[in-house]
Length: 475
Picture 1 (cartoon, one colour):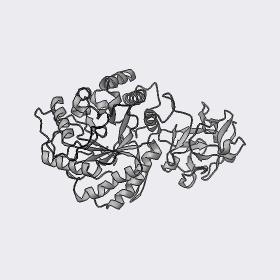
Picture 2: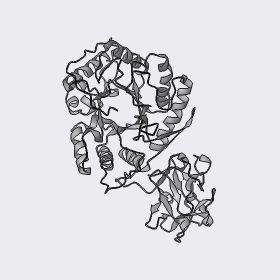
Picture 3: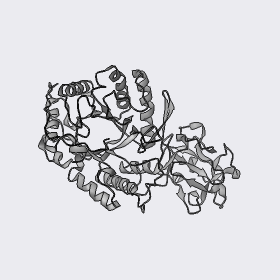
Picture 4: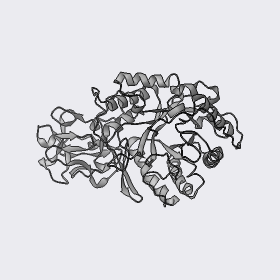
């Protein structure tokens, strides 16, 4: 992500490369792009660097096997907590073709082995490029030829020739992008993302150029690009930026603060970030557009933190024992809504999805007897997974039974059950912005016992730990 606009340069750098393998004309990418549900996995401190791209959570000393193991854990978290099926990864000339590249490919290989899509995007690295403009054509082409030689035959891997080509005029960037395509006829056009000019903001110019027929287009969309707006103002702004190109466009960077307690379910909010994020996710859903959130983890380092305040997930653990947690369940819920994974309207559903397992809070066997201990189970449309909040801070199921700390217990390990609603404080719950659900009487968290993820794992009260087994989101 580039947060300061670079000065635009006027001249174009010709990009020549040795063609790889000639193939028949590729099919068009023109169709709904909602198949891309993704997040960016970034380097700590952003991806603009002349150094090897060591993603957040990885170490430059990691072997391929270690990277693969760490990636397995991180990508599983993206899938489980968010429903993501795509990850966007940076490449640069300091990484590709090096010893680190041999390890770094463990991330790509982990993703494709899981069936996830991978978008590989070149970031300005100061070696092949300067200020959003390619200056070392040979290094740039060598990098891309190496990447295409390794992943060109993998249908799950997509290529974005350059992220935020801000050093070019729109006309010059079109020539550069067209040269990239012409030099690599082996790459199917429906596996290429052509960035909008500038900071990936102008896609309509690219969309109108016949040289890019059959490719996807990538758009970046942030509040700091254009200032504050009303909700309707953000809707209109984004729709105008997309124009008639929605069926080819993926917004592969957009984001908002996820660790400041903002409520992205608040339809009346006057906060610019809330308006922007609600409007963006609404337009994405209505237009059937794919998106890749910035960032899933990593990114710019916010003062006093070790990651980006926009991060949709927080990385926990050490070594290869890594887990992801969700700092703002309303933000994650809106992202899932944009992807068509929740509800048919902007209001989240009444299910409570656990962040650690991806399964929903469930009354086993659709039971109705008092003191039936609740559990997690695969999310479905059953009434035994529909939890309605009331003004009395109850969480009701079947309309008459309440989520209840059994025997008015407050201690760690107290079973959480259903019981006739009676107004007791042991039936009152706080659904918090950090994703926890806490008992009013106990102050303890709704907890999946022993960090379990299997169907039927029971729910209890426990001291709040920040673990993903205590993270819940509306679904």
